Image: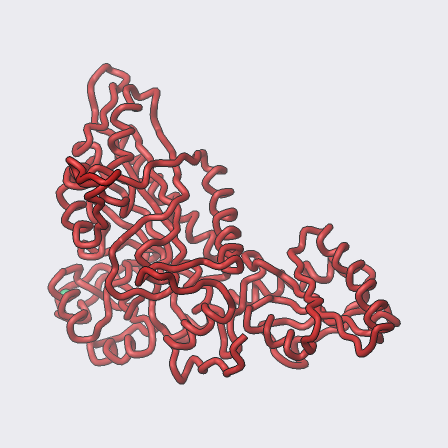
Length: 479
Ligand SMILES: [Zn+2]
């Protein structure tokens, strides 16, 4: 454990983030630049994310499968805009078994192409549709500027790939998955998100339409936290994915893809964390509660530990994820700080006096000091803890939403716009033109995050060019 204090977020947000990731043991740097080692505490968080999503995918009829890591390079070249978008980031395998390969292979940057190849074989008739497959895997994109969880050469994610008979079904699937991501982010991550459509320049390479959920981080920047793409018939045409319709006519399928990655861990860190470290939302926290036994001598130790084990068993039986910190040779104060830094939502303190009174002290991570402490009887402890965890979950969401509101401006002119993106989001009228978008990016470093699905209606002037604008867009500096 490094003894130095964390830098505060105000001092150096980026360094605060790096230090939190390393000290909380979420991840570590790898020997290959830009790769990351996800440590058990970080992986436990990711497992809870995957479980929450997987449950939703299966409830909407999706099934999981596994596809190969290696893809023939020619596959990537079949869809024109796909290859243009991905070739700068490809890792290419030229040798295998000691020999140069006849055709180089790429390590998947995403699996649309190999999925297209398989779907062309598997889909013959309208009876085969829809195909609703999800993959849990990792992909490689040769990023130049990397940061743990936010942008790494290899990252973990899920990628869903579906094929449908009609354009309407494809669009409905794309929107359904966007809704699922938003529901997950809000309910499990306590992360408020804005769901919207991407501009042409931010669209996925090979998609007709890309939707995303965007969240505001603790420094006011945006993080794209999940995307859902309507691929139209682009990949179906490139890979010849066709089916015989009810009238015996050959039709191209309509396909979609959608993904959420380990970037979301970065979102959780930056949305909820404070100057003491992480704050985990209870529904995703690897440990929802840590028990810290307090004693001064062996007699006290025996009584306190026995009681603590009993309390622990009761909580575990109720399905609460509990860590018992009975490490020797460390003071309770040290343990408090350690688990605070690692963001465990609730701490349960138990000393000789608590044993005598058959009570415990509960301390909330999101409310430091006395305000967050309460004395709770051991009888019915599981119910009391579950209730507290729900309160914390809700209050983290409320706090994040307040913060986003306080740092979102609806600028009346470009001057106000420039100030707005210095500190947070600008929700501004935009003509939809790529030129305005590009100029705004050049001049302010803010990009068009999304055009929220939720629109006020009406028409105003574009914040940049003054031409008529029908929609408002979220502009922000982004990770
Ligand atoms: Zn404009």
